[in-house]
Image (cartoon, rainbow, N blue to C red; front, top):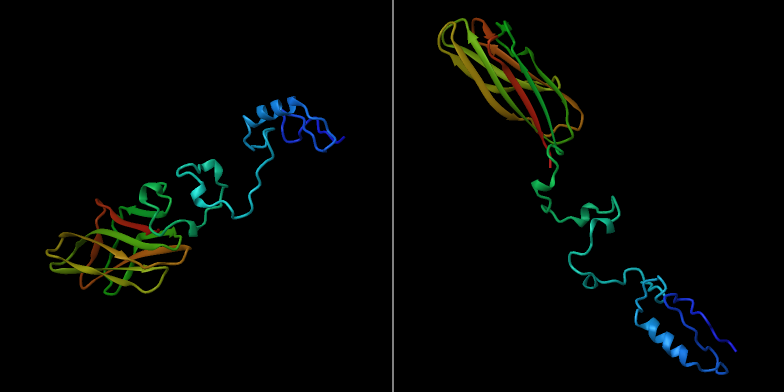
Length: 224
């Protein structure tokens, strides 16, 4: 006789079964088998042998839409190739997670120049560490002149390089006030610490920053 009294794959309930021609037939075998089959599900908890799937054998059509949850996805396993281009929208990005900003606001007081060539405006500099994105700079400079129809010219430079012209304004009367404001794109500097300087010069007389107002230098790195 080779009868099995307890089936190894069933525990709730189990059943006995004959395995050789000489084993006696018992009606209870059929009864307990029927009871086991009524809850048969192959889930590996005593209701049948666990179903084993070969690698890459479960098709997408076998998975119900909307059933794969966060808990079923291993951390750090979704790669860039799994995300369609332009699929990640702004609401899905944590605020300020992909931008770096740096700002400098300073009342420059009696800072002045008589230079007829570009020189750095004392105190009008900003250092920030970027991540390799595009760099936008916004500038506002209130200045006064000592002569009528005096020109005030401004420039900007990155990391001590040559100045790029930002533009020129004219102060109509001696002692007059004018505000120069503009924005400029400084390209895509490398991911590193960078220093931005503002510069100025005049065609005649003395050019003075206004101590009662603020020279503003704001740099924003734009990244995707």
